[in-house]
Amino acid sequence: MSPAPDHPEVVNERVPGAPYFQPLVEPSVGTALSADDWPQNKDLPMLFQPLKVGPLTLKNRITVAPMCMYSAEQEGPETGVLTPFHLVHLGGFASRGAAVTMVEATSVLPNGRLSPNDSGLWNDRQMQALTPIMSYIATQGSIPAIQLGHGGRKTSTLAPWLDTSTIQPHLKSHVATNGAAGGWTDDVMAPSAIAYNDETFPHPREMTPNDIEELKEAFRAAVARADKAGAQVVELHCAHGYSMHNFLSRLSNQRTDKYGGSLENRMRLPLEILAIMRETLPKNKSLWMRISATDWWPEGEKDDKGEWISWGIEQSKVFVKEAIKLGVDLVDVSSGGNTPKQKISVGPGYQVPFAEQIRASLGDEEKIPISSVGLITNGPQAEEILQAGKADVVCAAREFLRNPSLVLDWAQELGVVVNVPVQYQRAYTRMMTKHDKREPVKLH
Image (tube, rainbow, N blue to C red; front, side):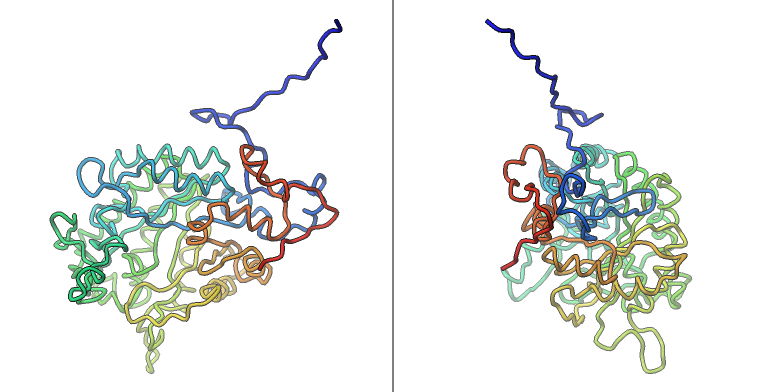
């Protein structure tokens, strides 16, 4: 009987430092493979080229937008605590190639939650639940991130599927009332005592100077917790009609102190908070910001006297430049959400022009990556946005909800070979077949 052949030792390697066994994937999922081995990856589309953002490098240009899930406990010791649902929900995006996976808008104070079932980071129990989620995202080779904010005058509202206009048409209310609904209508606060909608939203009280100082310290504490939990990116939410956007816009801010009136004053608190966040966050981690570039106010950004009357693109350009001075590494450009009278022209890529204008307004020494979002639904469309210089990064939300494998599908649409989860390789034999040239998949 002849001796057994001498086989080389082959080991199923694990991710270094992971708290449980996770097969090592190098390069990580969603990373374009070398053109030396995969000829079709020559002249790589921008969507799959790495990008440096502050101290970090994105493996591709596709990021997961923060998306509220309204799925945390509303009372008791688990209030605002993320659950296994959030781990599975976010982990699916991270394991399938997203460059950055961002946790939903997370409030720094109890009264900053949009609904009673939103995420929070004002105590250590919430940090403890966040930690394994951040760890899992990192083991998948995605950058773990979190968006921090305060909902301002749009807090103590119902989860969207509980809109009582479908249950009690005569009320048409979005309010989460005090009591069983878990609301805090007596503690909704905003720059000014102006409701988003008098009939259907809570009526806020005007924030006192002490409220403002408490909010700033709450952001400081939440950033420290996010850092300790493993976040590599922390983003300030300055969009969609929530607290920071409330301060920026004349529609929601009619204060007469140093936080209201002039553009300089209306920008003051968001900029103070950005400075606190940058000061608290280690230098090897990245500070981002999301803005609404416009209120979509029907009467425009200025009146016939040239006075600012709503938030718009020209003020956004100024605000972004001031934020860059404080160390913001990326700005994600969205729009709207601050008035029910907004008139939005919705269509494919409808918010991209705002990102393009802000990106074009930056001087050579100010340039940072600009991200765009809003009905970007396929790889060729995303690639065109980048190739045309309209944005540097594409941020997706609903498309990820519909398709957690979005990054892998967009790669196939563009004819790019990216690494896939080793556990799923058998499902990607078509993509991982060598060709002499890139052959994009035709879209129907």
